Length: 360
Image (cartoon, rainbow, N blue to C red):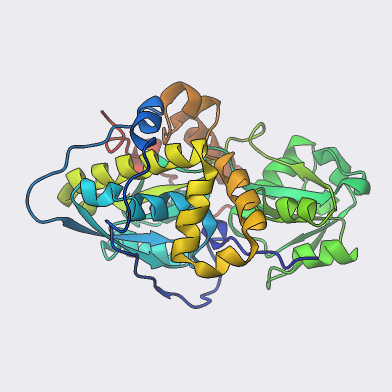
């Protein structure tokens, strides 16, 4: 079986430091914008700001700690000149989630991508960040199993062995919501911990019956290897906010115009890639050549990632839209969790999200 890729973007917020470093992005004007970009962006409800005069505004953008095809919109927006056209000089840095949230709150990183269920406890602990645009409109964390296992609903997990990295973070929150939907708790299943993220290998070897993972990772690679997967998602149970863009409150004031232009350019790239995934793959390979060694797998992962960018809510309100009701329901769920990571009093939705960068 092919080695599973760790999608660090949605790694648990308490993940121990595992090495990070800056990855400089190519020149913003490295290539011309695709010919269909303007019409595609318009159809998605995004606007393309006019090229400003004067020197470009520098923005440091934090992504997950491993460069990956899942960050294709950022790579394409850089290489196709969307950021440059908006008057931006963008540099990418790769950081693990907890470090990134702290750095964004401090203003050391201007804008970054982080899991919504990590933002809630962080804000509750006084870190001054706001979630400003949705990237993953569907929550990517899942429970997966071999289709032959007989696990097709949350109720089927009762008494089963479930592998997960630890009892923390977005996967742990998702698992509790999934079990609760079937009237179960973690005491009704056999939790086995894989702090080295080896649960997918354990599942393949039959050591466990199911595992937590990501919808755009393990099930995709299982299918490519000839093993159909059963996938259990949480979206219909608790609409947990997926990964999105975050910015510090001070930076939102100091660089509001630049951040708004950055969000518009990124959403434009998402719209282009949705229409033509190959452009996203090509941009990713240009920045991370190793991804080109297995283009079919990377394209399959990208297509699965694209499927998470839209939901019924974004279809009605536009790409990147933030569902406040979903955030409120998530806060309530996380507060009621056993061993809740959310400090009391819990932050309000107004303390968690800021839609000003999405406004026309």
